[in-house]
Image 1 (cartoon, protein in one colour):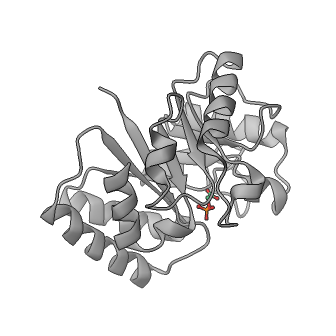
Image 2: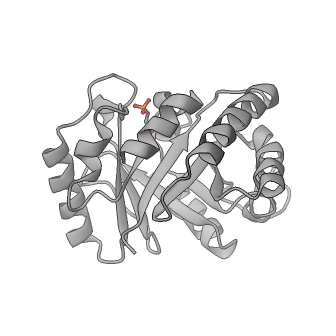
Image 3: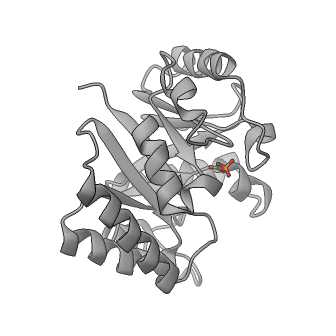
Amino acid sequence: MDYKIIAANWKSHKTIQDASNWLNEFNALIQNKKIDDNKIIVIFASFTLLDFVSRFIKDKNLKIYLGSQDISQFEEGAYTGEINGKQIKELATNVLIGHSEVREYLKQTDEELKNKTKQAIISKLEIIYCVSSITQIIPDGIEILAYEPLSAIGSGKPDNPSDANQICSDLRSKNLNIKYSLYGGSVTPNNVTNFISQKFIDGVLVGKESLNPQIFYQIIKNA
Ligand code: PGA
């Protein structure tokens, strides 16, 4: 099947109450009009939301995957403040690694991101690994990539779809293990079709426009 991955990155947004409202509204939309079988929906939520969201998904039997936005580079142990792969795996199936905001604000290095990737693989978490250019290092074992040019993230200025397609194609020819490449950066219901119709763009990673369930649903519909 020709899968399309549509991922929401909620970033540091939403309380449990907000997430509950979002999920109830989104659930009503998808019960009313089903999502195509080839569309894979992933929500990357804050650690504090994972328990609530995973229970909601299970209770309502929804075909939505859940991911964390980070993972400890260490295994279980004396690492105060860290959340390890085993803990995430209890609640989620996916993890986002290397987003430009953790590189910029948390100063996560390529070495740390490599260790995080290793821990995610040990815990059998499906990784979406973010890069913002063709030259960034991609650790071994990565199969899903999200290309997010810095100028497009949160700016309302998306990349040109054919340029993004070219970079995704180049990234894949440099990294033959990559099975899916996504685009991220100011994706909206209006531009998603132009991105997803590109040969080497198998999905989208959506920040701002995923915060509203109606808009996110529209993006999924148009994808
Ligand atoms: P944006 O964020 O859709 O708000 O540009 C995308 C991202 O940072 O993953």
